[in-house]
Image 1 (cartoon, rainbow, N blue to C red):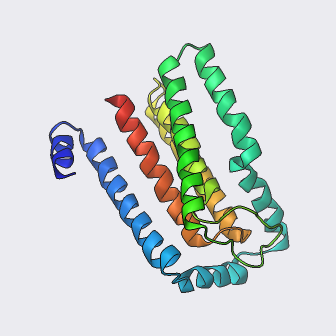
Image 2 (cartoon, one colour; image 1 turned 45 degrees about the vertical axis):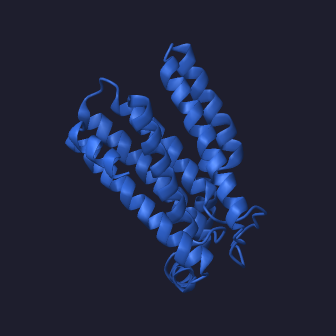
Length: 215
């Protein structure tokens, strides 16, 4: 690991080094959440966040909006979005990007499924609208939203668009991903630690895939 970091540092740009720091931070946060909250079941912060949401955010008019937002990383949406994106990339002969998208998506799904089955964390009690049947940690919506919209942001960054449009698109996609995570906590179908862990997992996996394909 130390040799990898040294080689990475010698051969990388400042932007890539910053990305590495975020990657290491994401792994650290994911490890802390996994050990302290999921394994040791120290869930006090999760329930404090739920209480904060109930007091300051949960409103009848906002609930339906959150339900719509959460669908942008739901299983039915993902089943349509990824094949559609891959077909578009193949149609324009972006074969490498199509392969990247496929490998990143499948790998992310396997990671989520494996971690859910391994930790088998029950869902939060008293969901706001509906009950989810699968295990809770990590949040699949948070993980896949970060992978999917992060992939789109990465592809947009590789285009010849003016930088202002690139930044606007990236900010929009990141905010969309964060709002999806927010909606999962709002609807009380995931613990806040599930969502934060999902974001960390999604970023870590996407970083590894981008670094691997660039090499």
